Image (cartoon, rainbow, N blue to C red; front, side, top):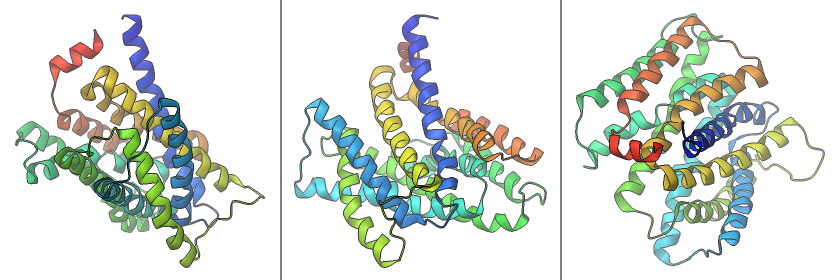
Length: 302
C-alpha cells in the first residue's frame, strides 16, 4: 500500500471517529435537561466560529445576495434545525448506538428521493440495499429483546426523521446546486442564518442554555460535538476533493462503527443479538446502495 493511499485511509478513519462520537455526545448533552433548540443554537454558534476561522484562513468571503441567503436558510432548516431537533429528542429515549445505526439509513433513503427527482436510475441491487436497511430497522423494532425497554420502539419513528431530512438535503444540493459556493461557505452561511432562527426558538420555548459557568458534562458535550462536526465536515470536503466522492462515501460504515464503539466506551451501552444482526444487515445494505464508480475509486487509491 502506497504512503498516500495509507494517508487517505487514515483520514477516513479519523472522520469516522469524529462523526461517530457526535451521537454519544448528543446523549450526554440531553442527559441533564438540556433540550434541542438550546443545543442547536450553540451548535450553530460553535460551528460558525470554527468555519468562519477556516474561511478567513482560506481568504474566502461569504456572499449575501438573495439567492445565497435562501440557500443558507434551506440548508439550515433541512440540514440541522429540523433533523437535529428530532435527533436530540430521540436521544432522550433511545440508546446512542441505536441512533448511530438509524443514521446509517441516509444513503438508503437518498436513493428513492433521487429516483423521485430524476437524479438517479433504478437499480435492483440498490433497491435491495434499501430493503436491507429497512429490514435492519425491523430487527431493532420487532423483537421484544432487541431494546433495553420495549417501550423505546415508539421513539424509532422520531429517530428516522433525521436521516430522512439528511437524504432530502443531499438530493436538494445535487438537484439545485450551491449557487457557486463551496461546501464550507454553504455550511458557514447556514450556521450564521441558523443562529438567527434558533435563538428565538430556544428563548421562547424555555430551552435557552446560558453560556455562563458552572459547566457540566452536557456543556462540554455540546462544545465537543459542534467542534467534531465542523472538523469532520471540513475534512470530508477535503477528502472528496483529494480522493473523490466514492472513496469518501465509505465514511458511512465508519461513522456507524465508531458510533457504536464510542457508545460502549463512553456510555457503557450493550446490545442484544438482534441489534448486532441489524448492524450486519445495515452494513450489507450500505454496500449495495452505494453508487458504483470503479474508475473513480481506482484513481483515488493509486
